[in-house]
Image (cartoon, rainbow, N blue to C red; front, side, top):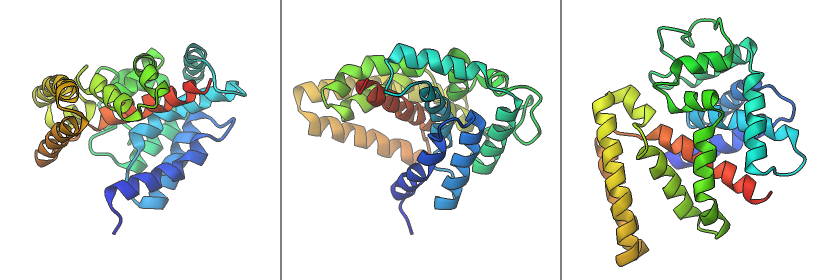
Length: 252
């Protein structure tokens, strides 16, 4: 049987082509990326990433070379302004097909019923409780702000450091949507508070005892979260989108 990591890699490879199909609507990119992922690995490995990358990838259609971050963010906002009810229908089908636990089960605009509003409006209804939906409303402000914060580390080739900084920026910034949806606000808030402490400890250990000690502390906390069944998956998805944006901008 494939390991989860291998499934994740296989799903990512499968999703690239539909996500970056030049001229395709955001909704088309979403549903096709989820379909090929399901065909490749028969499970949901990347829905959050697909939801984040699709508008960013669509915005790149405006450029023949990697854009400056502010140009890309402006193009992303233009893409978001053009989202229509057909994009919503495709996105709802994609979410239902991926079948993530609890996502899309909402009193308004449930993915299990036809949408009556455009995709951005549907995302706005969920923005207060879901960090991925919020990006559709705020023009991916959180992703681009975090990208700017870790850009120097990426330029210096410190990709692991940049990735961890991005992850802790999101997880320590507000309750993770995936944990919130599955376990409630109190537990999600406790993980956010713990993330801030672990982030500071990681810096302290890296400075005083070296990278191996710092990695060990992170691995221990990761194991503790897994033992408790806590998966900060939304923070991870936002991290992937951030690193994607940062790496692309680094070649501008």
